[in-house]
Each structure stands twice: as structure tokens, then as C-alpha cells.
Length: 110
Image 1 (cartoon, rainbow, N blue to C red):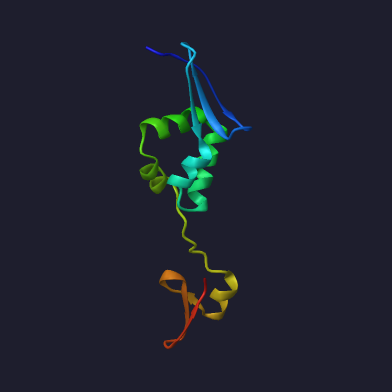
Image 2 (cartoon, rainbow, N blue to C red):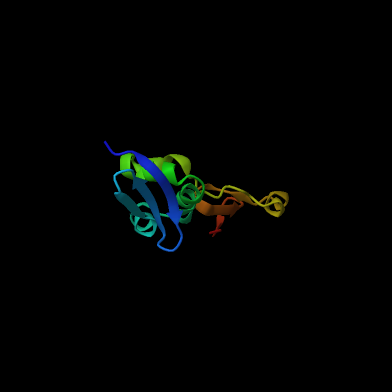
């Protein structure tokens, strides 16, 4: 049985490297993983956080887990903040990025 002796993120190759006691090494290409798994900047940011702060958890997620399910669970990418000036004027944000003023006028906000 192989035993993990070291792990780190190699900035030169953009890979998380796992080294085992028998001399073998697993290298995970983080750029390729992001291109395949991440759909938006929030998911890429979550993967980057794991790469830099906990490369062992990142490797475990990629090799043994379900990265798509994980990213869907931990990332939120909706903008639901209505600026104060809109609230003061009576402009309200509707669903799907539509703001309305009165019953018939609508504008797309984003």
C-alpha cells in the first residue's frame, strides 16, 4: 500500500502534486480541472481557494469526490442587492434581473 509523504501546489506547473513513499507521484493539472468542472467565476474562485489553502482537500475532491456536486452546493452566484437610491425612488427589483416602475413600465437591469 502506498503512503502519502508530501503534497503541495506547484506554481510553475499549476499542478497539485502528491508524492508517495514508493517514489510515485500524482500530478493534478488544476487549469484543466477548472476548464472541465467550473462553469463560472464563483466556482473557479472556490477551486482556487482550495488549491492555495488546502491542496490535500482539493486533491481528495478531484480524485475521490464529485466536484460538480460540491461546487453547486457551496457557490451562490445571484445578485439580489437593490441599491438604496432605487428603494428611495420606489423602483423595485423583480425576478430575473427585471426592475419595474409602476404597473406597465419595465427595464432590464442586468
